[in-house]
Length: 211
Ligand code: ADP
Ligand code: MG
Image (cartoon, rainbow, N blue to C red; front, side, top):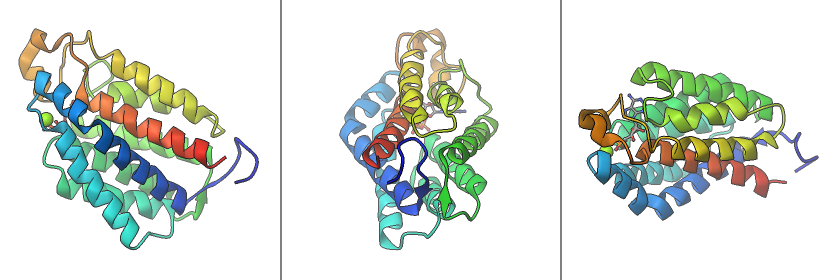
């Protein structure tokens, strides 16, 4: 797919990312639910499995022609099929990222980085959370901050997201259901930060596979 590090990303790349994300969610669903049973209501794995099954069905049936349209369709599916807080938040992430990509048929790594930063900002605005609140933002913010001009930066973003998810363990939750537990939320990894790291890992793997 061209010179490593500078290749462009087309609609099919985004479809493959979402399919890889759905597979990761399926593989890790029990772990996500287990994490959510410690500090939430034990539905995070099932919520995302349902949502990403709808995403893969939708983008597989009639794949949209542009990266932006793929992500906006996927975001709509998450919003309409995921019951929990994570549905509107992940749906907003994908829709806002897709909107920022506009109508281009191919996008660069730099464009995707900027678009994902806009998507993550929209998640922060919708949920009223910030890094340190023990949410998905603790994985997403360091990940998108690591994205640069080339696709090489996706591997760095993946490591940052995984570190960010681990860093939620000693945090006390200040947003979402886990915040009801107060200090008892300390000592557990946040389920949403964990699933966010899976989505960023799937993105890095899709980039790697395209080289
Ligand atoms: P619910 O909490 O409604 O059962 P899920 O279990 O699917 O929804 O998702 C829980 C995850 O959603 C949390 O682990 C956290 O990462 C994320 N989350 C919850 N509230 C917020 C928020 N206000 N901002 C960002 N992320 C949030
Ligand atoms: Mg839950």
